[in-house]
Length: 386
Image (cartoon, rainbow, N blue to C red; front, side, top):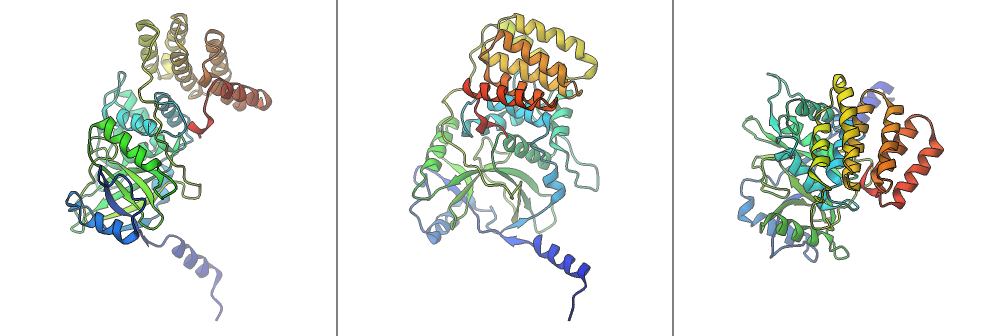
């Protein structure tokens, strides 16, 4: 019998979004189990299920699809990319674990310009997912890294990591009794197989960096893929899992190839500054994001450049001014701002990248490619940004 086209389309759509049982299991990396390479599928499951630290953590998990949730992540949004650029620069390199930790630290505890995340509940009777750029902007207006509830935090975490080339998913923890659950993000670290020792190095780096003996992640015993827990209620990336009855995994941009994280985090934050004046002016500039404050922002921008910033500070100053201007569609002014910085600090690599973006927005594609190529020669890493 013939199936009506509309009914067939509905049936195929239902199949495409059907719930899939996930093979991932929670796992605690430690000095005894710093890697799952060399263990069989059954051994990994046995090690995991016998670990007392995982009592109450669900082993039942499902892969789900929610286009409304995924659309909120928006890693290519200019505001999201701006914030991710500033945070990633503290740990230079190609997809390093330090960049992930820098993003986590800023959202959770803030920095010299902002307090840590401000928890705000959803409207009564609904589960409202805020766009990542909205959470960042609302937070900035009141002096916080961001605002919203746990799923908004997870959305922003995913957005910032995806914007620097990482691969993420959002996990919803649910209770069978109907109690309100929880949400958190996870970042894909890579495959921990016999040919890849990077996971062990990342685990070791995290243990040293956070003075801990245990790192919590999900692992797939079959594919050996590892996903690091980034729950905001944990003390650090790889902290303890939230306890519930089941987990649901929502993958962000699953149509793209996954990107592994590297262990090299260059050891320390790039904290060297030229002098107090340049840094203070940069912090002041970051607060002047309101369109009505544009004249003041341009004045502070000029003063910051006159304070002889280092190349690192020049990148920070340029990206902040660029962000302020493009929010108002002022691409020609953004280009002139980049050229001002280049005149003072011609070897600041990220300024050349920002110049290429402004040129591209103005339709000057050949000049944009030349500026981008020059930034690469100076050390701008194209793998760090989408």
